[in-house]
Image (cartoon, rainbow, N blue to C red):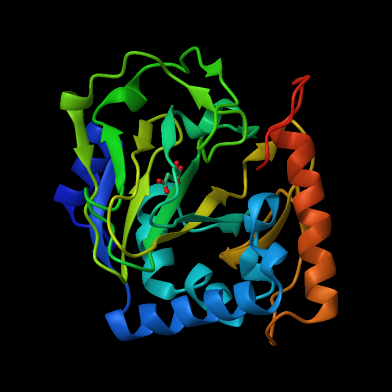
Length: 275
Ligand SMILES: O=C(O)CCC(=O)C(=O)O
């Protein structure tokens, strides 16, 4: 039986996203936030800029979220029972910084084909219109990939500042989540987010993405963790999970994976952004 209800699956099929899905308590979310902030305090560059990827490889609590059985049950309802984790991203918006995310489709520059994958956005803090939650253009996943301008613009939290122009904001839906809840979204749904105008940080831990074992990386090389089921395809190298916070070996592994990611994200681009 599917973990997501038939209404939730219908929402995903019709709109390209589903939310809110309850995963853990606000207290647990605070514990996870503390671990993120501990890493930031100890080694600031570890989570900054292009360091923001794959923090689950150095943080046991983020690893626990990535392999959380409720998250995986919901993901299984969408992509089936053989699930790989192919990366994570921390999307942090601090108050008084000009961070935003332009409207884009994840599938455009990520190299994961076919699109039998889904992205989980887990709220470590509340996420709402005031602090710049994600906004989805409902139904846009049914179209093909759209043209993106590569703006490399200041404040844009995407690698290339990739932007789909003229998205009608009035047709977008804010994904309002409380800390400990998550949303799932489709590889081709158009989405973005605005500035954080609150007095606190907005932290999203994004598993980008959960892929089915039949998905290939066509632009470079990703390593993966087997999250559930069996992998009869073996398209990707497998990597382990951390048992301590920020061990030297795990930090080296994260660095290696992130270097590979840069190759993928900037494939064919003459310019490089800061992420
Ligand atoms: O966190 C955000 O505001 C945007 C995140 C995003 O674009 C994504 O998870 O695909």
